Every structure is written in structure tokens, then in C-alpha cells.
Amino acid sequence: MTDLDATTAIRNVFAQLGSIPDPVDRARAVGVVLDDIPTLQAELRALRQDAVLAMRETRSLAETAAALGISLPRVSQIVKGISRTSKKK
Image (tube, rainbow, N blue to C red):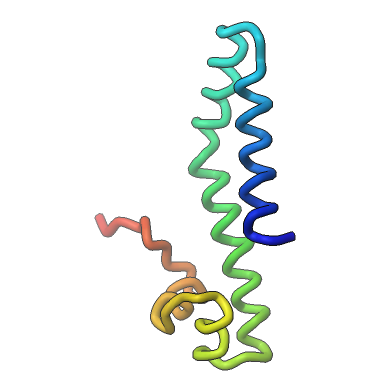
């Protein structure tokens, strides 16, 4: 699956939600998804971290960064589970 395929699959879910005919049902369904976004983001970050960790088993930090088109520090952050959206309290 390519990046575009993954994005298209998510947009297809949006289209399904948007096609719910009853506005009350549509609003409720979208609300459920919106409420679950933090959990979904955490699951996506974990999937990415697992993939990057697998890459690091056979590739250097520089090779991993180049393959993903991101910086070396960003690869290190992903491996450590540090999110760009993490906020210090």
C-alpha cells in the first residue's frame, strides 16, 4: 500500500460518513470518530514506531532517515516514541 492508497482509504471513510443521509445520524457518527481521534493517533504512532524500529534492525539511522524523507533527529524521536505534538506540562 502506498502513501496515497492509505490516504485514499481514510478519505473513503470520510465519504462514507458524509453519505449518511440523516443529519442526526451523520453528526453522531462523526462525533464518535472525532472523540476517538486521540486513540487513533496513538495507534498510528505505534504502528509507525514499530515500522521504524524494524527498519533500524537492518539500516543505519541515516539510511532510515533517507528512506523516510525525514531528519535523523526525527527518526530518533520516533524510535523513542516522542511525538511532534507532545506537549510538556
